[in-house]
Amino acid sequence: MDFPSVGATENIIMAAVLANGKTIIKNAAMEPEIIDLQNFLNRMGANVSGAGTNTVVIKGVTLLKDVSYNIMPDRIEAGTLLCATAITAGNIQLKKLVLEHITPIVSKLEECGCEIESNKNSISLIAPKRLKAVDVKTMPYPGFPTDMQSVFASILCTAKGTSIITESIFENRYKYLNELKRMGAIVNIEGKNAIIKGTRKLYGTNVEATDLRGGAAMILAALTAKGTTNINKIEHVLRGYENLDIKLKKIGADIKMIN
Image (cartoon, rainbow, N blue to C red; front, side, top):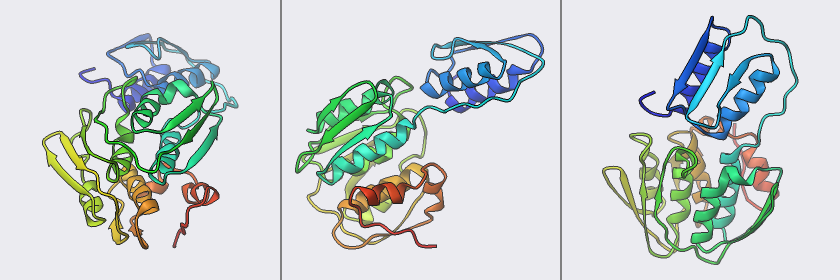
């Protein structure tokens, strides 16, 4: 593969499971979701090995069987909830997660000034009154996940100092920044870099969820903004988060889903 794409790796694995002969994927994505897919398919009777490394080998079988399987915890949802706590100077405990899946996120939150305690399956975070600016560069796993880029950018909008985010995975993933600017964020885009100068206050207004993670960024910014924020096109967010409004409401957010 020219680039270790998660979706492409997953699709090739699924196509090869029932194909005749052996398929080898080189420069495969190494994300935890690939390992989880391998474990699921093998439970069904597939013959997949190497997930989590850059070479995956699939030996085709003729039949898959029905199984019951518990999927892995959503590491991006975990990271989003931690960032929601960080931007509101709150504290939270998350349970039933895999800590090693979110290590880059945790490291950056600690760099921002958050106090974090963790064990294998849970994590506690206490945020400071104001976060510190940090630089972030997205990378394939085990680097900082591109799906957390926009979410993290939202919390840096009110951090003390200037942060630089470098998006090295996807092009045109800064569309949401124009919406954050409408809320008072001070952001400039220079090529693959987003330069964010932290401001003490964001302000509620009417914004749009430009995409899934950009919509999550709008929600997090709204949690700390002065006044009311109306976020349109929220269907993008619903595609990737289950009951996010209910979970945020449980930890103190004043949020309401309309229509």
